[in-house]
Image 1 (tube, helix red, strand yellow):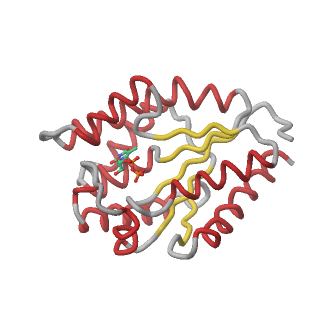
Image 2 (cartoon, rainbow, N blue to C red; image 1 turned 120 degrees about the horizontal axis):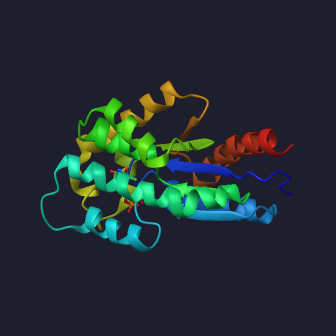
Amino acid sequence: MQNKKQGLFITFEGADGCGKTTQLNLLQKYLEEKGFEIVVTREPGAKGLGEEIRKLLLHYDGYISPKCEAFMFLADRAQHIDTIVKTAVNEGKIVLCDRHTDSTIAYQGYGRGEDIEKLKYLNNLATSGFTPDLTIVCDVDIETAIKRRGNDRDRMEQAGKDFQIKVQNGYREIAKLEPNRVKIIDAKASVEEVFESCKKVVEQLIKKRYN
Ligand code: TYD
């Protein structure tokens, strides 16, 4: 099926509770049935050291300064790209990643107010410029997202509704600035309808890359 050496790097983004993980899992199944080799991964904390960083980021029971938080996400990213993502893409696999660089821009930049241009520079440093081929942003109003999330909240999810609104607006800005890479999907509809939209953008990319 895949006739070129280089694989693809697809990231899923959105505010907490937007439903992106459900869509990522459906896409994994769909692409595997088509014969593609898929690697599913996430940030923060895919494996090993990353999992340790994730525990601190999401469950540390004390103050973490905004800059420290940003650097911890970036440290996880550097390790993740170098040890998991690049290798898989270079082996011709399709990597589906739950959150990546745009989360830092949306959460630490638009959400926490850290300097966005500096964060972009640091993202680039962490990834050595390795950029997703496609980023799907699941966009849903924050009321719906909060309902979908339930009551079990991690440290980031406890930041409140105003924070989530800033994050969501951040994603919309990111998509405006990079319309070729970043596609906003209306995630308010049913799981099946949202998946149809995801499939459409992914199939366009696959057609471009493999046909
Ligand atoms: P996770 O449990 O993976 O949440 P979700 O299922 O919503 O993806 O937690 C990741 C949290 O970390 C989420 O609230 C977003 C946040 N985050 C950042 O603030 N910056 C980042 O760079 C990344 C990767 C995640």
